[in-house]
Amino acid sequence: MIQLENITWSTGPRVILDDVTLTIPSDTYAVLMGSTGCGKTTLLEVLCGLRQPQQGRVLIDGRDVTSLEPRERGIGYVPQDLALFPALKVFDQIAFALNLRSLPADARVRELADELAISHLLDRQPEALSGGEKQRVAIARALAASPRLLLLDEPLSALDEAMRGEAATMLKRIQQQHHLTVLHVTHSQAEATQLADLRLSFANGRVTPL
Amino acid sequence: MNRSQQCWLALAVITASYVIFWLLLLGATAAYATPDSWLRVLSSPEIRHATWLSLISCTAAAGFALLLAVPVGYFMSRKSFPGKAWLDAALDIPIILPPLVVGLCLLIFFQTFAGKLIEKAIPFTYTVAGVVLAQFVVAASFAIRTMRGTFDHLSARPEEVALTLGCTRFQALWHVALPAARRGMVAAFCIAWARSLGEFGPILVFAGATRMKTEVLPTTVWLELSVGNLEAAVSVSLLMVLMAILVLVIVRRTGEKV
Image (cartoon, rainbow over all chains, first blue to last red):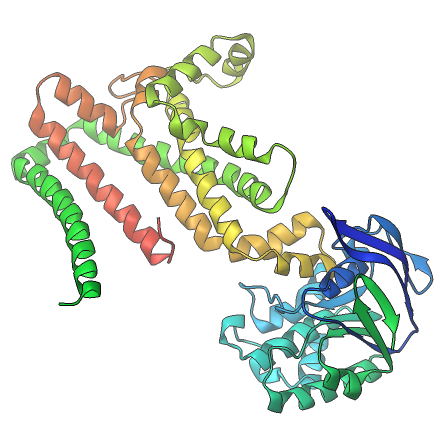
C-alpha cells in the first residue's frame, strides 16, 4: 500500500506538490492523470526517494520511508525516457539489481525475458533496440529485484498507436502476475480506461480521486 | 552562386586558410630537418633519455590527472551547491596562469613548512617526481574540463534508476556513470597526456633542466636552441609533433572531439 500524507514540494516560488495526500491499496493498478508539466514526475520521484519532500510523509505498507534512501524503499521505477544503462547489454541491465545483491541472476533474467518476450534481445546493446523493446527491457530491469511497488512514468508515450493496446495489456498482466501495486502516470484517457482500478487526477499541485 | 553558397564558400576559405597555414609551418619545419640530423638525434643518449622520461612522466601525469578528474568532474556536473560558480572558476586557475608562474608557485610551496614535510617523504624539487607534478598541475585542469563536459552530456537519469535498484551513490557512479563515460575518460587521458608533453615553463622552474636527469623533450628543444643547435631542436620538435598527432588519432578513434 502506498500512502502520501501532506506532501509538499516546491522549487523557488512555484509549488509543485501542494499538501498532497493519497492512498493506493495493495495490488491496485492506479492511474494518475494530469496535463504535461504539472508535476506528475515529481510525485513519482518523491515516492521513490529521488526528491525529499519539504513537508509530509511517505509510507509504504504502513512503514514510514520518508527518510530512507531510494535503494531502501523496494520500489521499481520506470522513468519516461526509460533510462537504460548506456554501456550494458540487455542481460546485464536486467541482472543489475540481482548482481548488486549478489543473487544468482541467470535463471531470473531468463524467466523475466521470457515473460516480456525479449529473450532474443539479451545480447543487444540499448542503442540496437526499438522503442517498444526498450520499454520492455526497462520493465524487466525494474521487476528483477521483485519490488512490491512499480512506478511507471508515461510508459506508453513512446509507442505508436498500434502497439499501445498490446503494451497496456502486458502491463496489466504483469501487475496481476507479480501482485504489484502500480502507480502509472499518464495524460491519456484511453490508458486510464483500459488499465485503472483506481483513477486519480493531478492538477494545481493536488491529487484527487476520479 | 546564391547567397547561401557564397556564405559557405567564405567559411570554407577561412577554414582552409587556417589548415594550410599550419601545414606550411609543419612542412617548413620538416624540410629543415635532414635524415642525418634525425639519426643523430635518435642516437643521442641525452635525447633518448629525454624521450623516455617524457613518455613515462606524461603517462604518469595523465594517469594521476584522470584519477582526479573523474571524481571532480562528476561532482561538478551532478551536484548543485552555493558558490559552485566560484569553485568552477578556481578549477581553471592553472589554465589561465602563465606557465612560469605555476612553476614558481610550486617552487615556493615546497619551501613552506607543509611543503618541506611532503618533501621528506617524496622529494619533488629538481627531481623526476617534480617533472610529473609540474605536468600534472596543468594537465589536471584540462582533464577535469573534459570529464565535466562528458558527465554533463550524460543523462543523470540512469544513475537515478540505479539508486532505486539498490545502488549507493558511489555504486551508481562506478557501475553506471563510469562505463558510460569511458570514451570521455580516454579523451581526458589523451588531452592530459598531450598537454603534459608540451609542458615546459613549470618544469624548467620547478624541476630544472639537468641532462640525463630531469630533461624532457621541450627542455631538449630549449637546451639545443640555447647552444645554437637548430637542427637538433627541429628534429626533437618533429618528434613531438609525431607524438601529438598519434594522440589526436587515438582521441578521434574513440569518437570524442578534442
